[in-house]
Amino acid sequence: MSCEGSAQGALLGSFNYGDTYDQCTDLAVRAGCTTFMFSSSYPVWGCRCCDDPSAAAAHALWSLYTVQCATSAPISVHGDPMFKHNGTGTHFWIKEDVLTPLLLWRTADGLVMELSARTFNRPETGNQWIKQVVVAQNGTTVLDVSATTDDRQMRVKRPARAGKDVNIQVGEDNLVDIEANGVRFVLKPAQATKFYGHDTRHKYEHLDMQFPDGISAAAKPTGIFAQLAGVQPMLAATKELLVEPRLEVKQRKRMGERISRLAERESQLKKQLRRVAAKNPKAAKNTKPAKALNERQLQRLANSELKPAKKPHVMGRPAKQMRTLHASRDVW
Image (cartoon, rainbow, N blue to C red; front, side):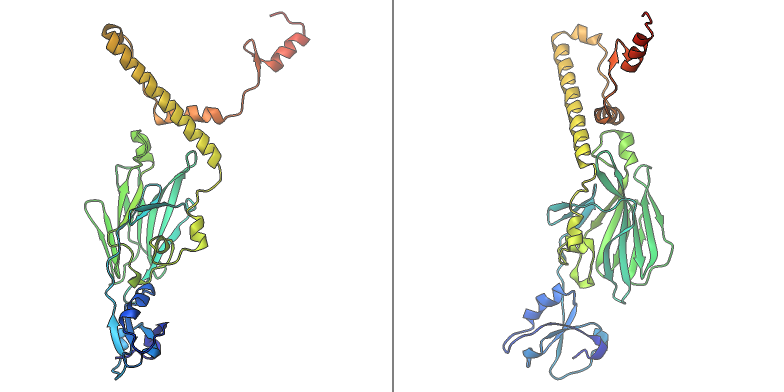
């Protein structure tokens, strides 16, 4: 069998006499080629990809081979945001409030699928989360999912009908499952659990994403996620996304340190109160317990450190007013 003309794809590699088709398999996996042709009689003809196996014709010297790609490790994209693969988490940042393509691949019938996401951030700390995920088919949006401030709920829209090779399921368990040509991912809402305040957790509700079967090279994926998964070489532009934006980094660091000190001081005061209660239960019973500082109060205290210093005062009045009083010989 041989794929000729437009059905024949790229040359994957050249071989010598005595080489076998097994040596072509790795080259086919790296190239995302699921079917390749190889001649055991003439290995010097090389290993070639077959883009359209259905158009293959009988041939006395060429043979077709199908690559059975092993399932890659699961991938999760969670938090603010973290790409976790093979036990390693990689933090990445994309421009907030801009729909950014993250993964592109093809379906079995040649449709181009595109997974994009929009993020929102918390400027004072630099945290960032995924707020919206859009799936497009040949440039047409077939799925639009957004996180809401409700208790772990999502807003799901399906503006256009997906192709027959694209399977989209919206479950009653508040999960959205998408599969196309071996690339499957699941969307689910999540709270910002790094914050202890209930209101703050809801304010930063976002979307988490899971690829239960990883990202297979068979679908010829490209984009940021394909590079982070190791399916494609890492580009310089993608490496830049792994570095936190330098804008206000120092200010956010100072603010974070200030919040940590305040939280530590609060913890020390609580321990001191417990020691007093242990020594004198009667006095502690009549003592009003200290009220825990919430997220907003901690933030307000942290912001106060970053504000410019106030003008000097004398005896409770501004220095400028004091000079005016002296000039007019007023008596206080």
